[in-house]
Length: 434
Image (cartoon, rainbow, N blue to C red; front, side):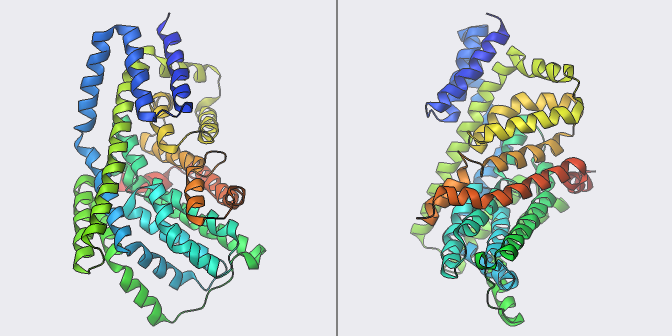
């Protein structure tokens, strides 16, 4: 058989293994190993597994992921996330749908210290959903705001999506983190506008909250100041060049741990649970990176990315027509695959194609992450929808999926704006790195 035929069989096998519920990391390892065995022999396949596994876990830049995950887990266990929510509600709660808007803003703020979509949705869902239910918010609006707001954890730095993209494409994590800031704020603003529109069209869906005095508002800001300070220090330090992303992650995690114990906001048992959660998440991320590194040489030998790129160019669609085809394929895949799985499986194939059309690799990273975000809330496999369903309890999945649809439209608007105006994503990394 030709390398192309073996490559197509490998891709089909990969999807079959995932459908059979094999973890995506091990599915990639199996396909990469046996594919290389079929193409270049057992000795070569074994060498790829050993060398690529070591190079993956020995990557210094990958330390960013577990450090920021630890930061987010300790913040959640210490209750700092609730302070973010209270501060957001104090300032926007008096507007229509104010509680849902506050949830979105709090999701964005927590995403800036967490880096995980699921963790953001779970943490803020536990805080915000009971309050929205108590005040009579429509289940679709309340759960939709949390599910959509949680996706910001995949875009706003420190994003695990950007870390994996950087590892897979050998791009700068710092540039990618900076590229996610303005799009993240844009998407947050669009989500807040969606909440306001829904609450305006149906006032009963999102009633106004009680207005607060300036003193009360400043008091909530004071309670959320520790976490906000860590967020500004870590992300701002990267921007001004004081820290590398790895240094910022370590400093941020250390500061949050010190603050948690200094304010007696966390017990030793709570801290140990946060560490255990971090170890589980980090093990999953490292295993996925190893799987992707084993799979990539197999794709390179089969020349599937090169052939697909030549095929797209042969269609005469042009750069943006080809981009539209790839985005459409991502949206379809997002209906059936988890976001991280989709990222690590597709980027080795899609990235060379996009680079052959002359697109900026940092800009495409932002586009890819936003499209993958969309997959997190699209049926039938919207990871964040199922997470929020677990927190919300008795709210049907159909209601949550219906509630996220307006937010999905906002994501499409954000995506179009970033495609039309690439500087939305590139202004910060270009100003920082020149």
